[in-house]
Figure 1 (cartoon, rainbow, N blue to C red):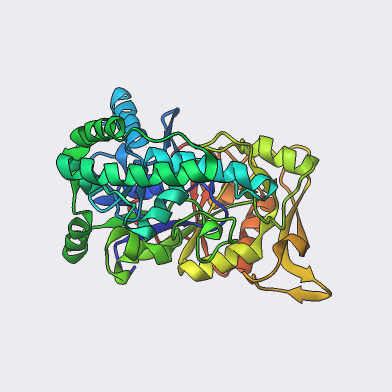
Figure 2 (figure 1 turned 120 degrees about the vertical axis):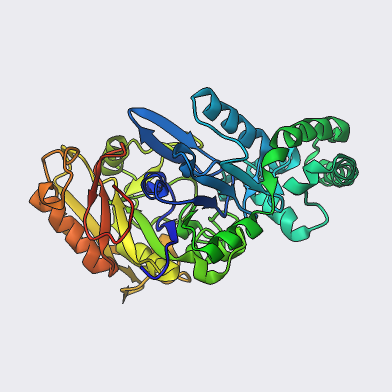
Length: 436
């Protein structure tokens, strides 16, 4: 590889299994960096039968000697973040300044952001976006507004923070009161709560951009951990049913404060089928018994919200589009069905039909709610794939499915996840180093 650095990106609508891939690669890295999103992300890692559900702390926290970084592009909720740190410590995971650093430039999720998120969704009725209600969108909106934004670095300057918070709380009280009849915010109470968070987090707050640029200059290995999936990107996803940040590999330089060349080798993670949480178009969705079977087989319930995910067949057009956009070098294929039972045929969408015209490539401007999917059918395997550790251990039908995915997406499948645990991974055409 030309660069030691690795970027792990989801290629669908999130929940692709990025956490397991990040965990596998992180053991050979010096830094693992979150560069986008907030507590709306959820990565699950299984270690020795124990499940860790991480929302703000990068997945590298489970490896000694790895420095985990929250970049400036993250919308950071200190209440959620600190609770997660304390829970990890309670479970015997070391978390402190030596292995966890927070960008002073990361924007703070405030109480009014969560309230505003909820009130807007309620007011939209059937047209709601389907947010997680964590205040992420309103936080990013205030980041763009500038005068209404507060950042992590503000917490280490108490008097300045109180003054800024008082002004913003007054503005938010007037705005949300006028629009929704919301009660005014108690600026003093909020300031006391957040300054206590700041006191506990202060040893870990720094200029993470400078830290990472120095690491890049020295040639230390950095892993950039994507949140959500590329089809939820605010610029390139199924707008407006998207998240509020740049979650593709294109967002790494701005969200981490590093030069574009630092992105390095890009691994795109995709499921063997497709799932989506919340509203928005989903061409291959199976809102039927097949979709229910996929959901139950894959335990498709949100790590962050617990909501049941919408499920359907693999959409090769969407995955190829995301892979092209992110400059993906190799694929990691997760959640191949294990012991699929009653599902005897797997389907892959290879084209869309709309108004009598066939579209072989994904086009963001298409009205996806009206397209009809053109499917290619492949036989499903009957044997369990959980024990497989080599490509040759997989049933012939599973190998054929992986080979067809490679052909349709135009990238090699480097890793194949055959179960949730760390060791349940088949190395295929990977060029990743340090996985042993």
